[in-house]
Length: 204
Image 1 (cartoon, one colour):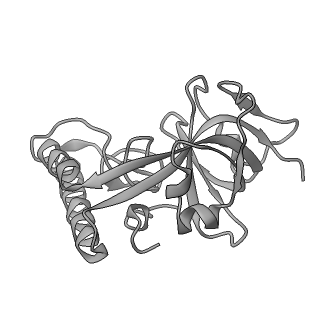
Image 2: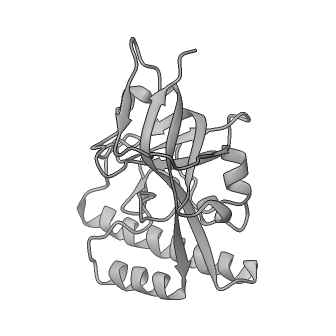
């Protein structure tokens, strides 16, 4: 996992009270789903990029800022993998936390190279609003880190001092990514996640 961008940004750490919750964006039709695990994707997700997969795991966190993503753990209960909403799923319910779910979706990849990091750095220094590094679809990392500042209570930092903290935190993360790229011997890092097509809660 040391060569994966999400290893940089583990910053924070679904029980349905009754019934079941499901969500669906589109019919996968006759597409053959590859059964994968959290551990297998963390080991090497590259063969599955843009391909349909099926995965099971326990939900350990749902994003409080819009419910656009959640994180599941595999059998070891430690390593996490990011799941994002699909085209027609508006959000994940926080009540999914603690539940076992099965997700059918498409594996996505974000390439983090020097061009990406330079653009991110420019946005930070210019004070632009952006979502890089937030661990959302299209963002970097798998933490619940909004605006680059670790927040334990689900609230984003506010005020001039906190804005400076946000900038410093994001610049640090950018440098960490550069350091990891250098150590990897490659010209980029890859951030993987699954974009949900359909999911269901598994009865236990």
